[in-house]
Image (cartoon, rainbow, N blue to C red; front, side, top):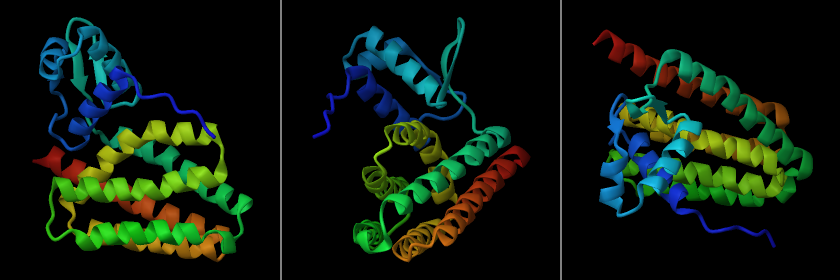
Length: 227
């Protein structure tokens, strides 16, 4: 049995603020004031300060001398840097799953994909809540894969990227209405490749979807720069 310590208060605060950044409730360039957050959440400034350091490590904020914490901007360079490494890490996770499990043992993957599809089918209208549900369901597939691979270093690395990638994923889902359908197609193809024991196809599916999402986000950034 794997021991899991309860999340610290600073981690809970970081997750709360991180979700507000991901959903653009807190916008790029906006200041996050320790005293204001502490008052709103009824916590100590020390806990908020620790939470901000966590968010800085996750690339959701920047901390400047005398200015304090500011929500980081999404830029062309930061998005490209993020997807360059994230796509490779997902391919590694996929390879490790198939190295440790045969396709016949991966029926659970199909079950996870059906859960993603069920979430998508249940959503009748676009919106922030819909995007959040799809993102969380998608990461459920990844969490299932962690259990198959049992590599804590790979899991920790991917989880550290999760807030930043969720942020870009949210941007794509909010601006391109067909992205929810694309997500369902991606996970279905991913599961089919896994069950077929086809590593080459699995990597191709991951790379194609990762590059597609990268281009969607870059298109939005270019539009915002030109506005």
